[in-house]
Amino acid sequence: MTLQNSTRNRPSSKTGGNQLDELAARGGRDSVFGAASAEFLSRIAHDLRSPLSVVSGALNELGSDFASQLTEEHKTLLAVAGRGLQRLARLADRISLASCLESGRLDLSTQDMDLFAAVRDGVHSATTMVRRRDVELHSEIPDEPVRVRGDPRYVGQIIEELVCNAIAHARRSVTVRASHTDGEACVIIEDDGDGVPIELRETLYHRFTPSRSRSGLGVGLSIASTLTHAHGGTLFLEERSTHPSTSKGARFVFILPTTRPASPDSTKP
Image 1 (cartoon, one colour):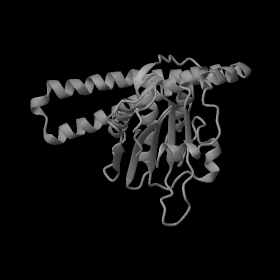
Image 2 (cartoon, helix red, strand yellow; image 1 turned 45 degrees about the horizontal axis):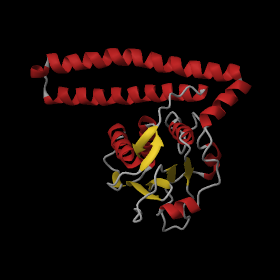
Image 3 (cartoon, helix red, strand yellow; image 1 turned 60 degrees about the vertical axis):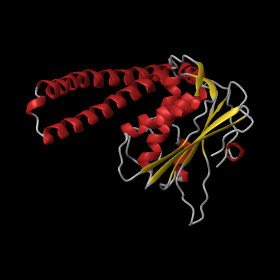
Image 4 (cartoon, one colour; image 1 turned 135 degrees about the vertical axis):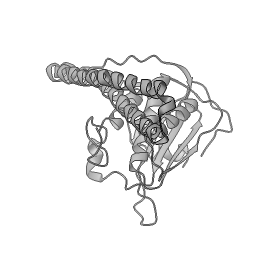
């Protein structure tokens, strides 16, 4: 799948718009609901972080003060507890970010950055958060830097959300591909799962709407979509073949404008 093929199939959209402004405008039209929703999310995030900090400190003390007395089974249990805390901490961070996006208060600090480096970081973070031994991750990301204008924190989070979503719904494999041509860089995240049901596609990027199942908080794709538009980019679900021999898994395409021309021998996965 090349950048040209993906962009050819992309839905028409306004790539230069700032969705944060749109959210703020929507909040102005319904200020009571918007402010209450953002405040509610902010309080949930805060109330999650407080006990997490206490439990995390207690686990660290157990691991250090009683290290010589711990059996292998105890160490395994502490490791499992630690990973559980990481997942809860990530949940609190995502809820807090959802609150900022709801109110249009995102602190976006853009700079010239290497998109492909952010993609590698996002993939690594996602595989740390979502552990599935039965799913193989295939990554095809060129070593050469590709410059875009963005906030490295949030560009990496876009990739993290998309990869986490793919891993959660894959059967056996997830593939991340990156490519560029003059003017645009493209990242494709695809899985071999059951795909996105037609009836869920209209609400795919709505907050608190699970994308493909009834499990999960349902904020990942909403966060990815809003952050993408805040960066002047495009994110869409590409139609997949319905032929029985072809995987019906989901393929998300993330595109950002580059800040300088790509080299003549642009990379195509």
